[in-house]
Length: 185
Image 1 (cartoon, rainbow, N blue to C red):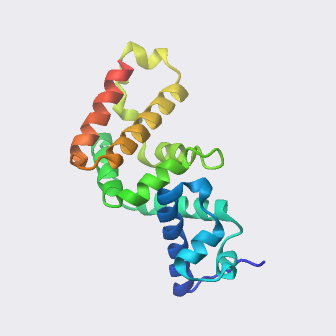
Image 2 (cartoon, rainbow, N blue to C red; image 1 turned 120 degrees about the horizontal axis):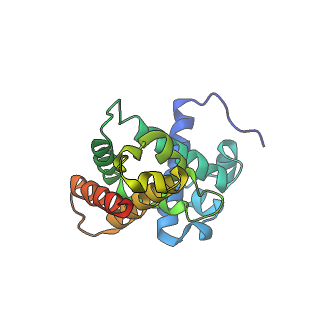
């Protein structure tokens, strides 16, 4: 079936509704249990509507991730202070907790893993948080340090989003920074 191109405003709204339904249902019953029929039934639309927009559930997830990462990226501007970027990151994901919890949990599925790492690596650039002049900076390969930073940020974000009464974004950003710096020293 042909996918829609040159979407109208209504088509964009439909795609967002399909994404939102996927996220809600994934949090409710787990991603692997969600079917396309579940998504369309949840919205009260025909399955044809789904297939006009997406080939399958995986394509919907990838489009949802891309949209969410693009929206998050648009909030950063040119702020070069890594501590501030980390705080802004937590502020943004905290403003849409449910959606970001689903986004970060999608990383647990092999088809989608690495998307968050790619995003963190290319957009947020937390590398300057690492103590550049220490002996450890030369001891560890840059790729290992990058993986450590990305994994720590994701783990802190998941923990924070899962809290019933989370601390402020600035506080989790400081906790994350402390974990990163202590772990690299």
